Image (cartoon, rainbow, N blue to C red; front, side, top):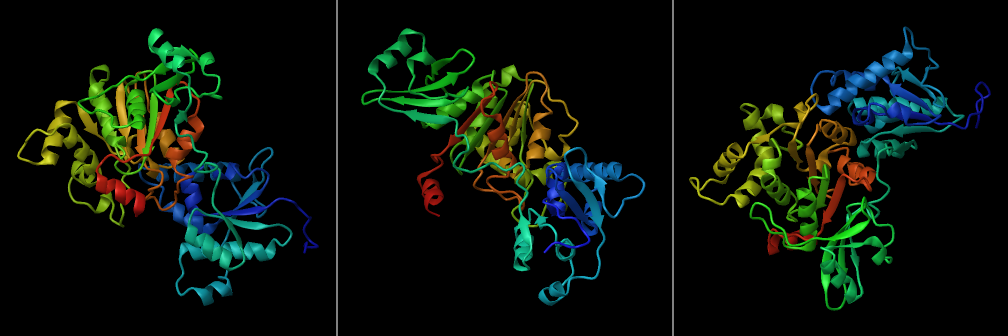
Length: 447
């Protein structure tokens, strides 16, 4: 039913939750011609994020500055225009809580105050749909239970997991003469000789096979040739399957400035990246290692005792474990001691990502492990630190995410892979086979 006092409009009114803003400070420009409402409770929550060096603090400050510039000296109840082709934004003051909320919930909290504002707007703005946008699954479910439309913020979400680029293909039933031409032409053949491979992507990898032979190759888009991948190793680490060979080739190729590796636990992502860094250390001034500090419990860096190195130790232990594999020599029988000695000897620095903003990394081999726990904005922040001669490697399992507001489609690693496909300096490999142990592989597949 359309209100007699308000004109009929085809647009929507989106009520934006705090976590959406902390995910993307520019989210208010992603809703096209639709209007945006920011509950006053959101501003209260953002006030707690104004100070700090992490990405969410930057997002909070950037959003507040943007809204302040848009609204001028006084904010009209009708809101402020966002720009040509866009809707308006307004701050909605909290009123008496919705009676339904008081009956349903025993406690008052920011989520319930945001939900109350959305329900109030739904009752007032009967001439158009009101939609609550939140990355909090629980809040969306609460909203839906009250008959309010609720959606996730999908602006930087990959379309589907099945369509995500894997960086590899299997090509069967090739003529034996083709394999001979690879040997005759120095390990490469023109793309014209493989017309059955449709739309090859620069740096895409291929398993070429027929009933008698098989070969690994990668497509070099600049020269439009397929180049054979010969057996390789790095720092004593030898690939155990075709995917690991693809990954190590990309990691050792200095022309590829950005490499992403995805795969389940035990597939060799971190080990291969560290091995390539050690093998390439003469070509780089330094190796940097980092992991997002996303804990599995409520304890974070601020609760852990000690200096920054001591605080980082629990998060960096998986990297130390991989370094111990590469450096099995005895040092009091302690893997962590051996790893620290290895780091010092090879000019390897462990750095917290919270302090990466503002740095300029020149001739650095930078490995970011567990990158599936980063947001798209955090990924962008890291990559834009790259100076001349720097190579950045992101590794992670996009099916194993610890961040409360990310999933396999919205995390920064998936977003990065999706956006970078086809770029000549980018390489990606999805590792599928676990090589840690028979037990680890069994557990990964069955549990």
